[in-house]
Image (tube, rainbow, N blue to C red; front, side, top):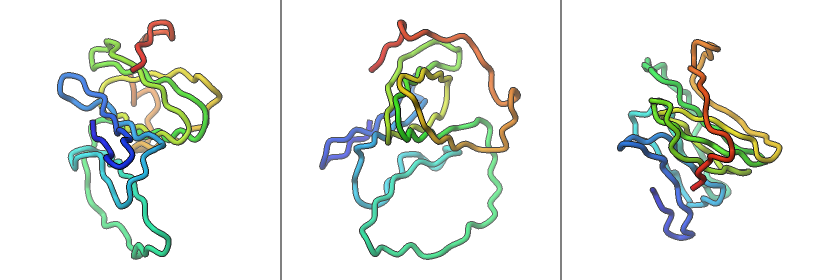
Length: 151
């Protein structure tokens, strides 16, 4: 876990066998400056930025850079509502769950995941494209709500 010292907000890493499955950035995180929570090796980068009024970010363009992506990684921004996220390892074994709510952000990196909407939900998903439908994922039977081990 990465901890913010001035307000004790915890950036949580969900891990299994030494591998990071997900990173949760709670809505309470408010540290000034730029904070990256992912190593350069991840195909999605997750950062938080907080700047004072008047800060100038110079105009820029991004260079064409070839990148090779092997697995889809997703970022979910919960706008409002509540979502239970269930985590699974690569063998489809259930591990544990977390509850996300308005303002929380999660980067899903490895392993499997499933969801149950606990309160009407609005969220934004960002992932690598193009999305190739059923060729992009393998669906499997997961737990039901009574089996959730929410941490």
